[in-house]
Structure formats: C-alpha cells, structure tokens
Length: 226
Image (cartoon, rainbow, N blue to C red):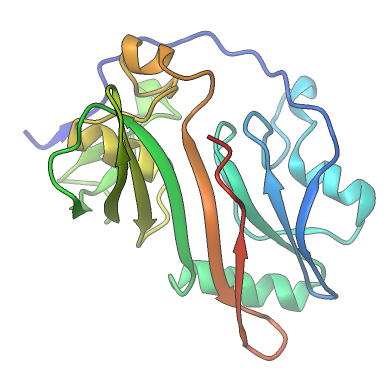
C-alpha cells in the first residue's frame, strides 16, 4: 500500500485558550524562549475567535517579537522567537537546514515493542481530511524520527522523540504508524487512547540551537508537565 491515514472520526473542536502569565525560559537582546502551554495557538488563526495566541501575547510584552517556528495547538513546550530581523533569519535557517536538536516527550497507547528505534516514513497532507497528515511513499516528503523508551505503565509507554525533520504532525503520525497513537490525540488516536488523557501527551522538552549573536550553543529546557 502506497499510503495510509488514521481511520478515526473527526472530533468536535472549540478554542478555549488557557489563561495565565507566560513562562519565559530565556530572554536576551536577540531572542525569547517561552514555554508554550497546551491549548494555545502558536500564531493567530483566520477566525476572529482564534486571534489569541502565543505570538500576540508575547508581542503585548515585546512588540518586536518575530516568529521563527511553530508548535501544534495541543503540544506544549519550548518555542523560540526572535527580537530582530537578523536573529529571525539566523534562527530560521537553522530550522530549515536541520541544524537544531529537538527532544520531545510523549506518552503513547500500549506497550511499545523494543527499547529504541528509528522511523523513516514520508508524510503528506491528507487533503480530504486536512490538516491531518498521512504516510505516502509515492508523494510524501522525507520524515525521520528517533525514539527511545523511558518508562512503561499498564496502558502506556513514555518515549523520548527526536525528530530529524520538521514535518507537520510528524511525531503524531509516526507514533500512529508504529501502532502506538499518542494519548489524548484528537486527530489520530482511537477512542480509548483519546480518552486516556485530558490533553495531547506531547511536550517539546528541550531545544538546542546556535545563538544568532556569536554562534554559541544554547540549550533551553521545559520540564514535562505530565
């Protein structure tokens, strides 16, 4: 079979972004690293009710804030923003050229077979069901993820995930393709896995990159909240 997608129903969505102050993890003249909460958009949506987002909240405090990358709405964890055009260009190129190191924590449904591995499955937008993505060997773009088991319980396995590419929904679809959907995933999890958590159990725990001023390595960490 050349492609496959998640056989799960579309679930109702309503945007109720979390309240509270932002947790700034790192701040200097060139960049801001912030802990994005689950349930908050990274950037504004098209509809008026989707204007509240991490980018606009940051700009209320730092008007010069510039977008560098994104996290999915239900994903929490480390995001970085630039504070000037040179920093935005420098950081953006690192993401584009895959020169950053990203580590995520996920809880997935079931007992994962093995202790570590590598997923190499190309991804493409599932257009009739967008924004869902799917594996497609004929037209998909290259997508690779390393994984490692860190803990298990009676219903789930905790994984460290290190994406080597940055495709949309990459970690969610790769876990699904392995046979272990991420708990709380409204797009890809079957009903039992979806109801096993009150939010998507995916967190961007650590981001490592070169500082746009001088090139020294920066490592920003956000402890996993689940």
